[in-house]
Amino acid sequence: MRLGPVSLVPVLVISFVAALALSGEPGDVTGDGGVDGADLTCVMALAFDAENGCAADSGQLNGPLDHLLQPPAGSSRRESSYQADGDGTDDWWVIPPHGRATLADVAGPGIIRHVWMTLQTDDPAYLSNVWLEIRWEGSGTPAVRAPLGDFFLLGHDRTEDLSTLPLTVVKAPQHGDAPGRAGFSCWFPMPFRQQAEVVVVNESDLQLERIYFLVDWTELVRDPGPLSYFHAIFSSLHVVPGSAQVSDNYVLIDAAGPGRYVGSLLSIEKIEQIGVV
Figure 1: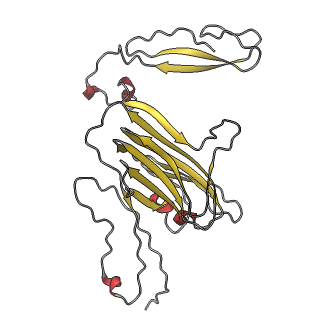
Figure 2: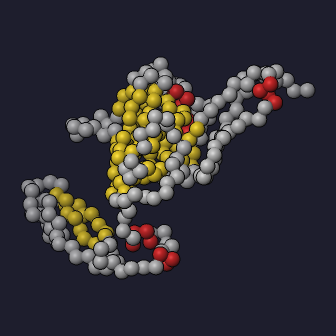
């Protein structure tokens, strides 16, 4: 396939047609012609000439698409569960009981932009037994370590639809007695300088039959400067009735230093019937 010549002018949108031969013999496909005996489909492509573009005051770039006028900060990259040999559609991984799988181990500087996954398992408590771990700069201690359900704001091992700016969950239709399935997306930007590692840990006694995933990230061309590393902390407490714990305050987070507190999920499950007077 050969695309016809395209001349980009400053800041203006220039379109060209990419012709794709779907049937017939291979031919010389250009932007303004066709192939004899072939069915063609047309794809519209839009582009900006960043190198020769006109400079603009950043204060004027406040429209929803104005970021397209600025040169990209880096290159888009993706780690995924695709079938590496390209022979078929077995685009999932299997994680054995008490096993772990590294979804992404990438070198920086960069920013993780999006993490998506969906799972298939017979474990009814997989939202508590499958854990997400993320490490920055080769640290031995995860900055993120939490059960999948709690990380995505789902308590009590129940899948529900969730729509927020940084986290979304799309619940799948229920099939028989199978555990509730869902698609999970995290949109928190997570910058790093040297290295980032995303790991899923299966702490269940059952095999995680399938995990499909995507990790989209930006490989930066230069050091991003001061960073705010993303952290997520999980803790739980089983309160014994009549103990001193009942009157204690429960600490959600105890952190020091500069940063931003984003929010918390608090799930409370009553384990003993309490009479009402």
